[in-house]
Length: 299
Ligand code: ATP
Ligand code: MG
Image 1 (cartoon, protein in one colour):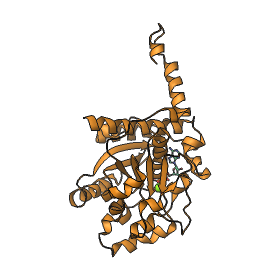
Image 2 (image 1 turned 135 degrees about the vertical axis):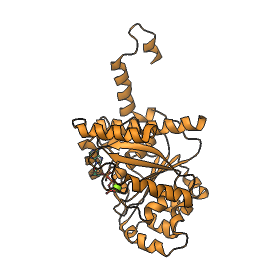
Image 3 (image 1 turned 60 degrees about the horizontal axis):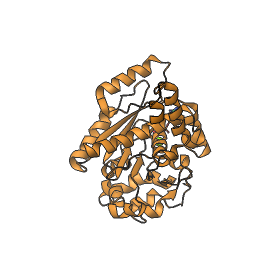
Image 4 (image 1 turned 180 degrees about the vertical axis):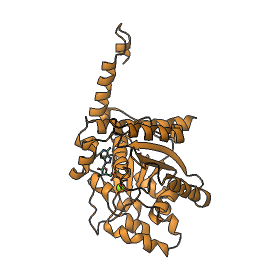
Protein backbone atom coordinates (compact mmCIF):
# COMPACT_ATOMS: atom_id res chain seq x y z
CA UNK A 1 0.00 0.00 0.00
CA UNK A 2 2.78 2.44 0.90
CA UNK A 3 4.65 1.60 -2.33
CA UNK A 4 1.64 2.59 -4.32
CA UNK A 5 1.09 5.60 -2.15
CA UNK A 6 4.52 6.99 -3.01
CA UNK A 7 3.78 7.09 -6.76
CA UNK A 8 1.97 9.89 -8.53
CA UNK A 9 -1.03 7.68 -9.21
CA UNK A 10 -1.92 7.45 -5.55
CA UNK A 11 -4.24 4.85 -4.10
CA UNK A 12 -6.85 4.10 -6.76
CA UNK A 13 -10.15 2.25 -6.43
CA UNK A 14 -8.69 -0.58 -8.53
CA UNK A 15 -5.86 -1.05 -6.04
CA UNK A 16 -8.36 -1.01 -3.24
CA UNK A 17 -10.33 -3.74 -4.98
CA UNK A 18 -7.13 -5.74 -5.58
CA UNK A 19 -6.29 -5.58 -1.91
CA UNK A 20 -9.83 -6.64 -1.06
CA UNK A 21 -9.58 -9.60 -3.45
CA UNK A 22 -6.33 -10.72 -1.80
CA UNK A 23 -8.00 -10.48 1.56
CA UNK A 24 -10.96 -12.53 0.37
CA UNK A 25 -9.06 -15.18 -1.53
CA UNK A 26 -6.25 -15.51 1.02
CA UNK A 27 -7.88 -14.61 4.32
CA UNK A 28 -5.23 -16.61 6.20
CA UNK A 29 -2.71 -13.88 5.38
CA UNK A 30 -4.80 -11.31 7.25
CA UNK A 31 -4.43 -11.37 11.00
CA UNK A 32 -7.24 -9.80 12.96
CA UNK A 33 -6.63 -8.24 16.38
CA UNK A 34 -7.28 -10.57 19.30
CA UNK A 35 -9.63 -9.29 21.99
CA UNK A 36 -7.93 -8.69 25.33
CA UNK A 37 -10.49 -10.94 26.96
CA UNK A 38 -12.50 -13.76 25.50
CA UNK A 39 -15.71 -12.54 23.85
CA UNK A 40 -18.86 -14.65 24.20
CA UNK A 41 -21.61 -13.63 21.78
CA UNK A 42 -25.12 -15.00 21.71
CA UNK A 43 -26.80 -14.77 18.32
CA UNK A 44 -30.49 -14.33 19.09
CA UNK A 45 -33.77 -13.33 17.48
CA UNK A 46 -36.88 -15.33 18.25
CA UNK A 47 -38.11 -14.63 14.74
CA UNK A 48 -37.42 -17.69 12.57
CA UNK A 49 -35.28 -17.64 9.43
CA UNK A 50 -33.66 -14.22 9.87
CA UNK A 51 -30.10 -15.50 9.41
CA UNK A 52 -29.03 -16.42 12.96
CA UNK A 53 -27.37 -19.69 11.97
CA UNK A 54 -25.99 -18.41 8.68
CA UNK A 55 -24.46 -15.42 10.46
CA UNK A 56 -23.10 -17.52 13.33
CA UNK A 57 -21.25 -19.98 11.10
CA UNK A 58 -19.98 -17.48 8.55
CA UNK A 59 -18.82 -14.91 11.09
CA UNK A 60 -17.16 -17.68 13.09
CA UNK A 61 -15.43 -18.99 9.97
CA UNK A 62 -14.51 -15.42 8.97
CA UNK A 63 -12.75 -14.82 12.28
CA UNK A 64 -11.14 -18.27 12.25
CA UNK A 65 -9.81 -17.93 8.69
CA UNK A 66 -8.33 -14.60 9.68
CA UNK A 67 -6.32 -16.12 12.51
CA UNK A 68 -8.54 -16.14 15.60
CA UNK A 69 -9.62 -19.21 17.60
CA UNK A 70 -13.38 -19.63 17.59
CA UNK A 71 -15.80 -21.98 19.33
CA UNK A 72 -19.37 -22.29 18.05
CA UNK A 73 -22.04 -23.70 20.34
CA UNK A 74 -25.03 -25.00 18.45
CA UNK A 75 -27.97 -24.52 20.80
CA UNK A 76 -30.70 -25.28 18.27
CA UNK A 77 -32.07 -28.87 18.10
CA UNK A 78 -32.27 -28.42 14.30
CA UNK A 79 -28.46 -28.67 14.33
CA UNK A 80 -28.06 -26.39 11.30
CA UNK A 81 -24.89 -24.73 12.57
CA UNK A 82 -23.30 -28.16 13.10
CA UNK A 83 -24.22 -29.11 9.52
CA UNK A 84 -22.72 -25.97 8.01
CA UNK A 85 -19.52 -26.45 9.97
CA UNK A 86 -19.16 -30.06 8.80
CA UNK A 87 -19.61 -31.52 12.28
CA UNK A 88 -21.44 -34.79 12.94
CA UNK A 89 -24.66 -34.24 14.88
CA UNK A 90 -26.41 -37.58 14.68
CA UNK A 91 -28.20 -38.66 17.82
CA UNK A 92 -25.68 -40.19 20.22
CA UNK A 93 -22.60 -38.08 19.44
CA UNK A 94 -21.33 -36.03 22.41
CA UNK A 95 -23.27 -32.80 22.15
CA UNK A 96 -24.50 -29.69 23.91
CA UNK A 97 -27.36 -31.74 25.35
CA UNK A 98 -25.04 -33.81 27.58
CA UNK A 99 -23.16 -30.61 28.41
CA UNK A 100 -26.38 -28.98 29.70
CA UNK A 101 -27.16 -32.09 31.74
CA UNK A 102 -23.71 -31.76 33.31
CA UNK A 103 -22.63 -35.20 32.09
CA UNK A 104 -19.66 -34.08 29.99
CA UNK A 105 -17.53 -30.96 29.69
CA UNK A 106 -17.57 -28.48 26.85
CA UNK A 107 -14.13 -29.73 25.80
CA UNK A 108 -15.45 -33.32 25.58
CA UNK A 109 -18.21 -32.19 23.22
CA UNK A 110 -16.23 -29.77 21.03
CA UNK A 111 -15.44 -31.23 17.61
CA UNK A 112 -13.10 -29.78 14.98
CA UNK A 113 -14.86 -28.11 12.06
CA UNK A 114 -13.88 -28.96 8.51
CA UNK A 115 -13.96 -25.23 7.74
CA UNK A 116 -10.82 -24.09 9.56
CA UNK A 117 -8.29 -25.53 11.95
CA UNK A 118 -9.05 -22.59 14.25
CA UNK A 119 -12.70 -23.51 14.49
CA UNK A 120 -14.44 -25.88 16.91
CA UNK A 121 -18.13 -26.66 17.24
CA UNK A 122 -20.18 -28.18 20.03
CA UNK A 123 -22.91 -29.88 18.00
CA UNK A 124 -26.64 -30.05 18.74
CA UNK A 125 -28.42 -33.34 18.22
CA UNK A 126 -32.13 -33.99 18.08
CA UNK A 127 -31.88 -35.02 21.77
CA UNK A 128 -31.82 -31.31 22.56
CA UNK A 129 -35.44 -31.02 21.43
CA UNK A 130 -36.74 -32.32 24.75
CA UNK A 131 -34.43 -30.22 26.85
CA UNK A 132 -36.68 -27.13 27.07
CA UNK A 133 -38.97 -29.30 29.19
CA UNK A 134 -36.26 -31.33 30.95
CA UNK A 135 -34.46 -28.15 32.04
CA UNK A 136 -37.53 -26.84 33.85
CA UNK A 137 -37.04 -29.11 36.86
CA UNK A 138 -33.26 -28.77 37.04
CA UNK A 139 -31.30 -26.82 39.63
CA UNK A 140 -30.10 -23.45 38.30
CA UNK A 141 -31.89 -24.18 35.08
CA UNK A 142 -31.07 -20.80 33.51
CA UNK A 143 -27.35 -21.08 34.23
CA UNK A 144 -26.51 -24.56 32.98
CA UNK A 145 -24.60 -23.29 29.94
CA UNK A 146 -22.88 -20.52 31.91
CA UNK A 147 -21.65 -23.13 34.36
CA UNK A 148 -20.40 -25.32 31.49
CA UNK A 149 -18.58 -22.31 30.00
CA UNK A 150 -16.72 -21.44 33.20
CA UNK A 151 -13.27 -20.10 32.58
CA UNK A 152 -11.50 -23.27 33.67
CA UNK A 153 -13.44 -25.37 31.16
CA UNK A 154 -12.91 -22.84 28.37
CA UNK A 155 -9.22 -22.51 29.14
CA UNK A 156 -8.70 -26.02 27.74
CA UNK A 157 -9.98 -24.89 24.35
CA UNK A 158 -8.72 -21.30 24.64
CA UNK A 159 -11.02 -19.68 22.07
CA UNK A 160 -10.80 -15.92 21.43
CA UNK A 161 -14.47 -15.93 20.46
CA UNK A 162 -17.45 -18.06 21.44
CA UNK A 163 -20.62 -17.82 19.34
CA UNK A 164 -23.87 -19.36 20.57
CA UNK A 165 -26.51 -20.04 17.91
CA UNK A 166 -30.02 -19.84 19.41
CA UNK A 167 -33.26 -21.50 18.33
CA UNK A 168 -36.14 -19.26 17.15
CA UNK A 169 -37.79 -18.93 20.54
CA UNK A 170 -37.34 -17.16 23.85
CA UNK A 171 -37.47 -20.40 25.83
CA UNK A 172 -35.00 -21.80 28.33
CA UNK A 173 -32.34 -22.59 25.73
CA UNK A 174 -32.18 -18.95 24.62
CA UNK A 175 -32.24 -17.81 28.26
CA UNK A 176 -29.28 -20.12 28.94
CA UNK A 177 -27.45 -18.55 26.01
CA UNK A 178 -28.19 -15.01 27.27
CA UNK A 179 -27.02 -15.87 30.78
CA UNK A 180 -23.78 -17.42 29.48
CA UNK A 181 -22.80 -14.53 27.19
CA UNK A 182 -21.30 -11.05 27.49
CA UNK A 183 -22.80 -9.75 24.25
CA UNK A 184 -25.87 -10.25 22.10
CA UNK A 185 -25.67 -10.11 18.31
CA UNK A 186 -29.08 -9.63 16.71
CA UNK A 187 -29.42 -10.42 13.01
CA UNK A 188 -32.23 -8.48 11.38
CA UNK A 189 -33.58 -9.49 8.00
CA UNK A 190 -34.19 -6.59 5.58
CA UNK A 191 -37.81 -7.63 5.00
CA UNK A 192 -41.37 -6.80 5.94
CA UNK A 193 -42.01 -7.04 9.67
CA UNK A 194 -38.26 -7.02 10.33
CA UNK A 195 -38.69 -5.09 13.55
CA UNK A 196 -41.72 -6.99 14.70
CA UNK A 197 -40.95 -8.92 17.86
CA UNK A 198 -37.72 -7.02 18.49
CA UNK A 199 -39.31 -5.18 21.41
CA UNK A 200 -40.09 -8.48 23.03
CA UNK A 201 -36.53 -9.70 22.48
CA UNK A 202 -35.08 -6.50 23.97
CA UNK A 203 -37.39 -6.75 27.00
CA UNK A 204 -36.26 -10.33 27.57
CA UNK A 205 -32.64 -9.25 27.33
CA UNK A 206 -33.37 -6.52 29.93
CA UNK A 207 -34.96 -9.07 32.22
CA UNK A 208 -31.89 -11.30 31.99
CA UNK A 209 -29.69 -8.23 32.60
CA UNK A 210 -31.53 -7.20 35.73
CA UNK A 211 -31.94 -10.63 37.29
CA UNK A 212 -29.34 -13.02 35.97
CA UNK A 213 -26.51 -11.39 34.01
CA UNK A 214 -25.89 -7.68 34.65
CA UNK A 215 -22.91 -7.60 32.27
CA UNK A 216 -24.98 -8.57 29.23
CA UNK A 217 -25.43 -5.99 26.47
CA UNK A 218 -26.57 -5.79 22.86
CA UNK A 219 -23.27 -5.05 21.16
CA UNK A 220 -24.00 -5.82 17.52
CA UNK A 221 -26.84 -5.56 15.03
CA UNK A 222 -26.31 -7.23 11.66
CA UNK A 223 -28.56 -6.54 8.69
CA UNK A 224 -29.02 -9.67 6.60
CA UNK A 225 -30.53 -10.71 3.26
CA UNK A 226 -30.32 -7.19 1.89
CA UNK A 227 -31.76 -6.90 -1.60
CA UNK A 228 -30.57 -3.65 -3.18
CA UNK A 229 -33.31 -3.78 -5.81
CA UNK A 230 -36.04 -3.12 -3.30
CA UNK A 231 -36.92 0.16 -1.63
CA UNK A 232 -38.05 -1.80 1.36
CA UNK A 233 -34.51 -3.02 2.11
CA UNK A 234 -33.31 0.59 2.32
CA UNK A 235 -36.26 1.56 4.51
CA UNK A 236 -35.51 -1.26 6.94
CA UNK A 237 -31.81 -0.38 6.91
CA UNK A 238 -32.39 3.26 7.79
CA UNK A 239 -35.01 2.41 10.40
CA UNK A 240 -32.62 -0.03 12.09
CA UNK A 241 -29.70 2.42 11.93
CA UNK A 242 -31.97 5.16 13.30
CA UNK A 243 -32.93 2.98 16.23
CA UNK A 244 -29.65 1.20 17.02
CA UNK A 245 -27.13 3.74 15.68
CA UNK A 246 -23.52 2.60 15.79
CA UNK A 247 -24.38 -0.80 17.19
CA UNK A 248 -25.36 -1.65 13.61
CA UNK A 249 -22.43 -2.98 11.60
CA UNK A 250 -21.56 -0.90 8.52
CA UNK A 251 -21.34 -4.14 6.55
CA UNK A 252 -24.70 -5.39 5.34
CA UNK A 253 -25.10 -9.02 4.23
CA UNK A 254 -26.63 -9.23 0.74
CA UNK A 255 -29.20 -11.79 -0.29
CA UNK A 256 -27.08 -14.34 -2.12
CA UNK A 257 -27.78 -17.76 -3.56
CA UNK A 258 -24.23 -18.89 -2.70
CA UNK A 259 -24.86 -18.19 0.98
CA UNK A 260 -27.98 -20.34 0.97
CA UNK A 261 -26.35 -23.16 -1.05
CA UNK A 262 -23.25 -23.58 1.13
CA UNK A 263 -24.81 -25.53 4.06
CA UNK A 264 -26.10 -28.15 1.61
CA UNK A 265 -22.43 -29.01 1.06
CA UNK A 266 -21.59 -28.97 4.77
CA UNK A 267 -19.75 -25.71 4.23
CA UNK A 268 -19.75 -22.01 5.00
CA UNK A 269 -19.86 -19.63 2.05
CA UNK A 270 -16.26 -18.71 2.82
CA UNK A 271 -14.99 -22.08 1.61
CA UNK A 272 -17.88 -22.87 -0.75
CA UNK A 273 -17.33 -19.75 -2.88
CA UNK A 274 -14.57 -17.60 -1.40
CA UNK A 275 -14.75 -14.87 -4.05
CA UNK A 276 -18.52 -14.39 -3.90
CA UNK A 277 -20.20 -11.25 -2.60
CA UNK A 278 -21.70 -13.21 0.26
CA UNK A 279 -18.30 -14.50 1.33
CA UNK A 280 -16.76 -11.03 1.13
CA UNK A 281 -19.54 -9.51 3.17
CA UNK A 282 -19.16 -12.03 5.99
CA UNK A 283 -15.36 -11.55 5.99
CA UNK A 284 -15.91 -7.79 6.22
CA UNK A 285 -18.46 -8.17 9.01
CA UNK A 286 -16.09 -10.46 10.95
CA UNK A 287 -13.30 -7.91 10.57
CA UNK A 288 -15.60 -5.13 11.80
CA UNK A 289 -16.57 -7.16 14.87
CA UNK A 290 -12.92 -7.90 15.68
CA UNK A 291 -11.79 -4.31 15.15
CA UNK A 292 -14.61 -2.89 17.26
CA UNK A 293 -13.67 -5.30 20.03
CA UNK A 294 -10.08 -4.13 19.85
CA UNK A 295 -11.16 -0.43 19.87
CA UNK A 296 -13.29 -1.01 22.93
CA UNK A 297 -10.38 -2.39 24.89
CA UNK A 298 -8.35 0.78 24.32
CA UNK A 299 -11.33 3.11 24.84
P1 ATP B 1 -34.10 -20.46 12.45
O1 ATP B 1 -34.88 -19.42 13.15
O2 ATP B 1 -34.93 -21.52 11.80
O3 ATP B 1 -32.99 -21.01 13.29
P2 ATP B 1 -32.17 -18.70 11.29
O4 ATP B 1 -32.56 -17.39 11.91
O5 ATP B 1 -31.04 -19.42 11.90
O6 ATP B 1 -33.43 -19.67 11.22
P3 ATP B 1 -30.96 -19.20 8.77
O7 ATP B 1 -31.18 -20.66 8.91
O8 ATP B 1 -29.57 -18.69 8.93
O9 ATP B 1 -31.91 -18.40 9.77
O10 ATP B 1 -31.50 -18.65 7.38
C1 ATP B 1 -32.82 -18.95 6.97
C2 ATP B 1 -32.80 -19.35 5.49
O11 ATP B 1 -32.36 -18.22 4.72
C3 ATP B 1 -31.84 -20.47 5.19
O12 ATP B 1 -32.37 -21.27 4.17
C4 ATP B 1 -30.58 -19.75 4.70
O13 ATP B 1 -29.83 -20.54 3.80
C5 ATP B 1 -31.18 -18.54 4.00
N1 ATP B 1 -30.30 -17.38 4.06
C6 ATP B 1 -29.72 -16.84 5.15
N2 ATP B 1 -29.00 -15.76 4.83
C7 ATP B 1 -29.11 -15.61 3.50
C8 ATP B 1 -28.59 -14.66 2.54
N3 ATP B 1 -27.81 -13.65 2.92
N4 ATP B 1 -28.95 -14.82 1.26
C9 ATP B 1 -29.75 -15.83 0.87
N5 ATP B 1 -30.26 -16.75 1.68
C10 ATP B 1 -29.95 -16.64 2.99
MG1 MG C 1 -31.03 -21.21 12.98
